Length: 338
Image (cartoon, rainbow, N blue to C red; front, side, top):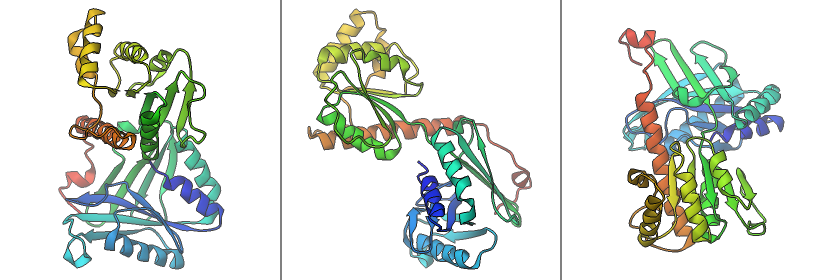
């Protein structure tokens, strides 16, 4: 979600330098993935690279870099007994000092990423700092982090972007509100739709756009490809019309309908009677939520549905990574390994 970008800009504008600690490579089992980032200031930290003794050592070294200055540092940690961690993998970290004189630049970068652009980074051993650039491109076209080394020289490239997680949720009742409040902190870009003007709560989470409309199906047609649809309205007739509208599309990531198996069977019969091809019914998830969680409490339903959407999202990202072409680098051609 890259919240560290705005935090960094805020720190620099307040006159507080920071060290950017980035996981540049992982081997085996590790607490965070390549590209994970933490900020270290004189007296505080933001975000995490995995916690524990690894994070304590990284923070200690980062504060030394704050005092002493100097070029970026590369550190390697084996997450074994000697480090007080039992993951068993290996983590490489890059530590880079960011000065307050660059506050305006980082504010511009943070706003660019929030607006949909991609921040690209290139850091090479021996350089005084990273080269950063802003590009108008889809971050899905490349891996977020690459690290190469021939044992002496190394290079790290990173793409920082807002992860696309568009959700269109129909229904602002108790369950709908609980799901919105569960998804919002996870970086979902939520369009929250209802036919009632006065149903939305006074306080709306950041990243949530509310729509009160008499024609909610319009939001189905306007949603971006790869959208996650959730239908949880107070009206079964409206639920059905939204199901029809959603199933005219073939480019959504997920479509969930609240209700029982009986409701699903009723809707399936009506949809087929209206000409829907039976295989398309597999694209409708009803009931929603992780199997085995049967509580009807809104907060429990929200937790279950949120986990379900995250499972789908992780699976789609894994498939996307698997089908990308592998970049062959001079370092890898040499057969060397860091």
